Amino acid sequence: MERPEICIPITDVTRDGIIGRARSFAGLNADMVEWRLDFFAGYEKEVVSVAEELRRVLEGKKLIVTLRTVREGGEENGSRFDYRALLTELAASGAPHFVDVEIRRGRETMEAVRNAAQKAGTKVIGSYHDFENTPSCEQIVSILTEARELGAHMGKLACMPSREEEQGRRDVETLLTATEQMKTAYPEFPLITMSMGEMGKDSRRYGGLYGSEVSFACVGTASAPGQIELEELNGVFDRIYSGRNHISLIGFMGVGKSTISRELHRITGKPEIDTDARIVQNEGRPISQIFEEEGEPYFRRLETDLIDELGSLPPAIISCGGGMAMRDLNVKKLRALGEIVLLTAEPSTIYDRVKNSTNRPLLNGNMNVSYIEGLMEKRRPFYEKAATLTVATDGRSIQEIAQEIVAKVNEKKER
Image (cartoon, rainbow, N blue to C red; front, side):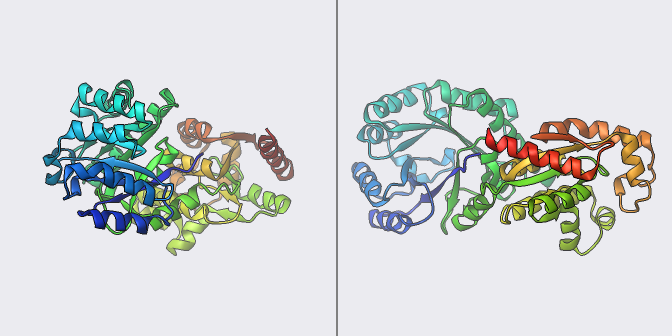
């Protein structure tokens, strides 16, 4: 899983301010800089020379030049420029690495800029912005496909999630799912996708796990709602893309994750982390109380947030709660950290192992084989989709199971 590049914006008004800002950005841990031309108060005839100076000052960082009008989420000032003519001139100059073109400007505009860009070695980003809503998954894929068919080198889509919490979360998931579908269909076509505003920040943090190759951050002044400070975003990426070779154990309650984790610790020397125990420690209350007082959705969010913490730790054996693999984002994060091992067992085996437990809130009042079997069947597709390795536990010793896991993990490393 490759770490996405980070782009930071320049929104200064004067030429001196723009160049000064670029100098302050040159040593920062960012890969790209976007000059938002619609903030520029200078003359149109100065634009190419400013872009050329920016490229020199930025010391190897990639330069994007973007012009937005109010209808595209930009400044009123941007409307005074001749959109097609200026972007075509910029593309032809070869000064920026990328020129951003709104695909709603139409085929003729895209072709004019693209043709000029090809001769100069500039690349075109075909972008689409919706500051009111989140399109459906199908619409997002269709829009990004249009950018590709128009000849853009990269597709970009930004949209706004609902302010209502649950719908907003679904909107962010829609954006991420569509990104993955588009990337699966056209793996060679680079994508930038984001959900804006406070609710959409997770797309900026985790979009790379779904196929978005650039995330926009800010250094003090944001150019779009929801941008995260550069230092914070780098911290998130450091944890997610650490490549620390964790081994995560998933599976239904009672498959033996905690016991097997202890044996893996003995064999490998890696520390153990039990996600349920860590949540209990962080919250200062048992899981049954968290469920009773806050509800299951709250607990599931705690699980998701905890994975970021794990990425900052040395390689470990992570024993995951039974529901950890039910959320796609959790799976994406865990895969970025290392192998995910699915432990399996028969429902009757599970019952024998948990029947005397008093800390299984999902089985309260339903401690029987039939109910366990039904719940396991609901979760089975999620577990199987998440796993990178699968190991059966029925009728086997803990030592035998742990040794098989180590052997399979080492075999994958050697491939």
